[in-house]
Length: 126
Length: 133
Image (tube, rainbow over all chains, first blue to last red; front, top):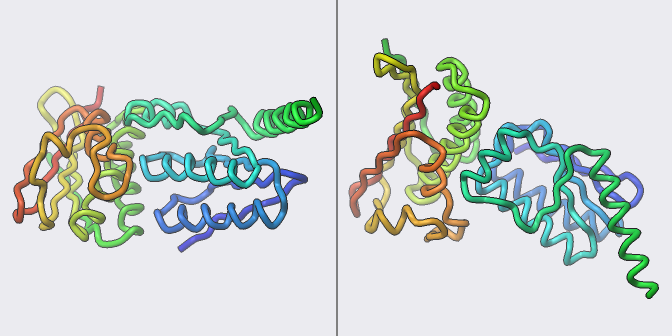
């Protein structure tokens, strides 16, 4: 089974999925990310799916689960780089990924996380 | 002329292999990128279903021609427990496997033709077709 590497950049963990994911790799990634969020105190997680050709209900549910787990561990998740054909297929499949934030690319994902983090700090100070 | 490709579905890595073979066939048939993505996604759902609910099965990938258009036909068969209530199994959100309940109902929306034959104790045969536009 291939494992997906988790990279750390400042307060953000970045995962770029470059392999055709099998279900076991997906579950391993979920656990690796939860561990890494706690170990590094990361505030954000970016999952780059630029190279992912299909997202089926299992992978879609994994994205939503990672977002939920990270949120519980005080980190926000952004999925970036979704292909148009993947978005069309996901919606038709019936999966709208309601709880998952998305951005068009890595740069916008980082900007979104910085914005969210800033907003949280302002809220906390009030 | 019809070409076909039979693949076993016995493990998670077979599900990945099925996706790859279906993708290649979809390209050969001339499906658009969106239609390729839809049919590969449907194949992924149905292959996983065969694995999860029947402990495995097989798929036949066929390139078909109706005289006007070419298409891709996928037949997933297993000798598992079968589906007692087919309309219920095709309902969005219905699951007995702890998933989202979108595998069957969602795959049906992603293809042009969907046929499901199953009875308790007699396994399941699901045939889907996607036609090139």
